[in-house]
Length: 207
Image (cartoon, rainbow, N blue to C red; front, side, top):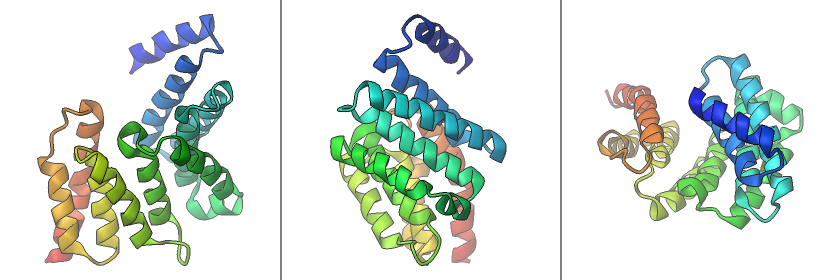
């Protein structure tokens, strides 16, 4: 990670308006924000991802990457500050504007990433805006095209569990536990680590 950051920083110093570098900066920031467990750090990284994504989108408005990572950044930032505060601050519109653009441009980007983020949006919204069935619909779109995506199955399992469907959730989490990480080793290994808690929650519910 540090080596990637250093190389990217040097390249951006030389070519600050290069789109291919700009979106990769947003991607590495989102990777860090996604894995951050400390709220303040997640908030800072989320905001930086948002800004880096927006810059990439301005450089190449017809490409999906900038909008997608900007939306991811707003999502990470919102998780850190709290969904209710994010809604109160008007971030929902900013998030959906970028994500919906990404969905129009290339919903299958990043193993169906835009579909997964939209599904997670409906999962994390507070009642009465939450819509778990709609959430599942977006995960299923990603799974249909990218059955190797462990994150899609993890999100599906968590949503099914919250919807009171623990047995179906168990089937989904087994896909994560037994799935190959070859499609994206770092991503796959991260998701399998996260899946341990979800698996324990499902087992507890099934007792």
